[in-house]
Length: 295
Ligand code: GUN
Image 1: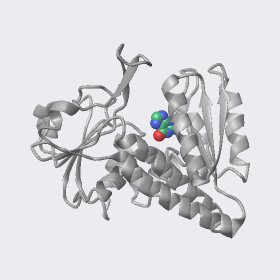
Image 2: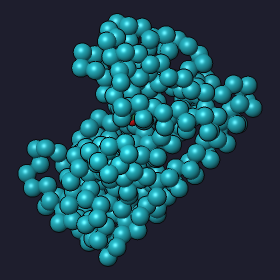
Image 3: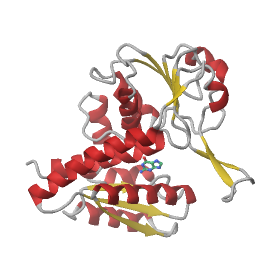
């Protein structure tokens, strides 16, 4: 079997078109456009590249965007002051503090300081709690992107056995909560594997839909995949590659070559989940703007 390749760029461009319509309607109604502010601390090259992607996507759909860049030496108090200023700025509908933060900054304290109604990352405990309770407001963009991709690809998630590898707060945990819920693109039987899982391959081989979100290349090999499974690769790692001009290439968690001989459909890296993450962030920013004007 050779797997169908799920093109995240194609699905993402459909979402972008929907958001652009929503932004235009918002502008007619309110005379302004939704606004996203990204806070980027330090000089991690991967974070700078993600943030550039977010800025470009916002510009394309008409969302106003600003990035506040600060040195890694910023203090916790200074960062909290920035967040407080954004919480109180009516032009800012969405706030995204790019993670990871430098080690001396407490990620939880910073995220908790964001106004939950502007938390377009869906990481504030109020939004994470609402998601777990089955009443999502803002869910994190990557899990939303994975779910939207599965829906657009007509993968029947109702009662499907889903195995997620990885339990991060940005992907594994919220994805579990999303796919467990009743509703379209969900109502699945979800297993989450992690570093404490005893026999990972035995778990993953049961999956109709296998989602790799561990952050380590080579986590999923073909012997871990049931023939005909749908495989979604959330991992993005930079591995050295002297044949490339920039000295590295991006690779996912899944051994793409061998797994595509077993799976029925698979996402590539790059060009799979990555573009979906950005498009669902745009959806959340538009939602935040509409919620801010709905009362
Ligand atoms: N770093 C990598 N992905 C993300 C994301 O979705 N949100 C934030 N805030 N940081 C990230």
